[in-house]
Amino acid sequence: MEIKEKEELVQQQYLTFFLTDEEYAINIQRVKEIIEYTTVTKVPKVPEWIRGVINLRGNVVPVVDLAVRFGLEERPITKTTCIVIVEIEQDTERTVMGVLADAVNQVIDLAPKDIEEPPAFGTRVRLEYLFGMGKLGKKFALILNIDSVLSNTELLTVSTLQPEAVDARSDAGERATEQLEA
Image 1 (cartoon, rainbow, N blue to C red):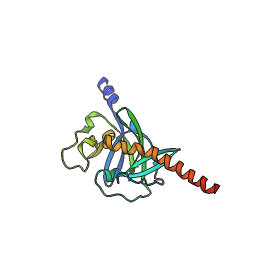
Image 2: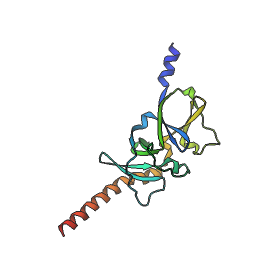
Image 3: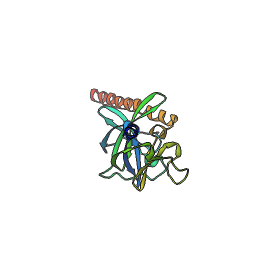
Image 4: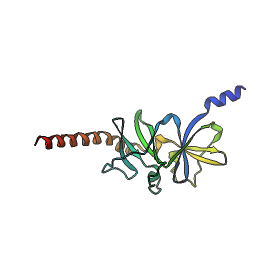
């Protein structure tokens, strides 16, 4: 009984979702919420895998298309497409961002014995982006190390979106006010 209790203590939960036909997982502690796909505002001069930004309760949140990030084709938006809002931590700084998913599947419990090392071949994702492979019956879910999916340089690009988007909104507001006054 004591061994089982210890195993349950180290068991963690993961949210699984689909990109193309592959199942991925993110530690549930990094997931803030899941929202229905909404209008994404394109932002110039950002990498193609950054779809744009959304307004989430007054906050500018960058939306990342992981399929494009991993070198796959951009997926069409469907009725099951959603945005998983996650919190990324890099160099003690936290950034909230959205991750585009074709569909969210389920929350699973995985014990350390259910997580295999990622293979050095056969995945479309770079190994440093993977924490491991979670056993789901006869198949696996690729468990993402969400903090390493974006490098420091790329995170700087994403974090600069927020002030620029706010500046762009206030510039547009000022122009509209000037036009009304003229």
